[in-house]
Amino acid sequence: NWAGPLILAIGTEDAKRKYIKGILSAEDIWCQGFSEPDAGSDLANSQVAARRDGSDYVINGSKIWTSLGAYAKYMILLARTNPQAPRYDGLSFFLVPMKSAGIEPRPIKKLTGEYGFTQTFFTDARIPAEGLMGREGEGWKIAMLTLTFERGVTGGQAGGISPVPLNVGDVVAVAGQARRDR
Image (cartoon, rainbow, N blue to C red; front, side, top):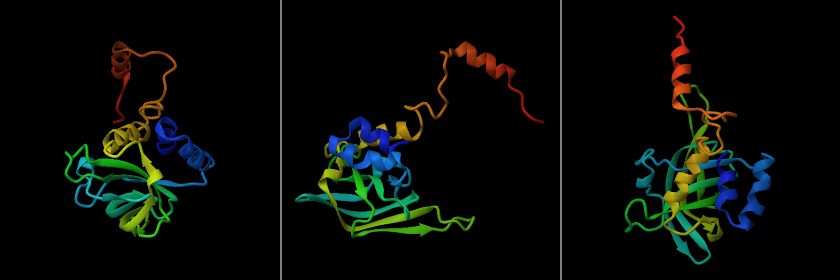
């Protein structure tokens, strides 16, 4: 619901050919690398570092609460490419192959005993520069676009798609008919 629409919206033709088929067939699981142990959900405070080195980026740091991180083939990753830039401007957005050397997802045990999340560690992980979405420094803008897909805003999943336009009066009328179970 989020990686595919994002790639279709702003990805290169090569990225569309490489990723969309696996997303549509559900052969490829994707995970999200946004939250960090010391930053939580403050995405603008992302400290995972991505440094360009020839035809690769070298990634260091960790992400937390990575849903399905132990099973994912790819991750969408928000990383800091310019530590001197203002918090929103120094971020870049990557499509990362999870099987790259230096990427280690460690399962986190939930209170229920399940392991649905991981903390994902990047230790000199080299990923192809072609995984950069947009340009360096556009990560914040791309992450915000991604969240519109993830939250269902763009596709209508969050609130459903109404076949007829609604106005405030309609919403107030429906709300007035709502009753609580007691």
